[in-house]
Image (cartoon, rainbow, N blue to C red):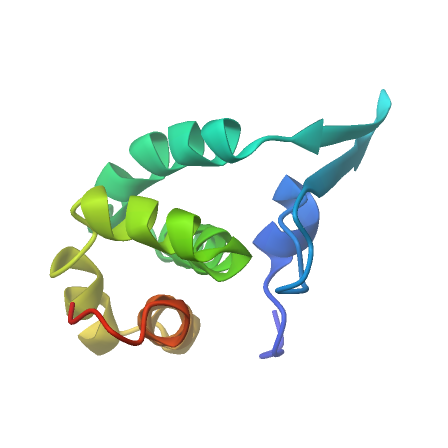
Length: 120
């Protein structure tokens, strides 16, 4: 897998690549279905504990998905923070896999970008 600025979870889970989008879409076998913020929040509840998983491929995808959700809106960034992803995500910054480190740093960046008045 080559290093790229976009993560595979963006396509696999349909998270938006643009900060201006108010809804994201999943393109799959059943067409394009909008995903609500509540559904994103539900996904965060499942993703947050997986930050501690030691499988590099899973860890990459989890970090990438959390970054994409946090990027979605200020409210979603707060959902990521409230899911107690921090400080667990910070331990990923020293994980042996380069892409895990990169995606973990992206989570930190996206949360701090959309919530500049809050400290993590």
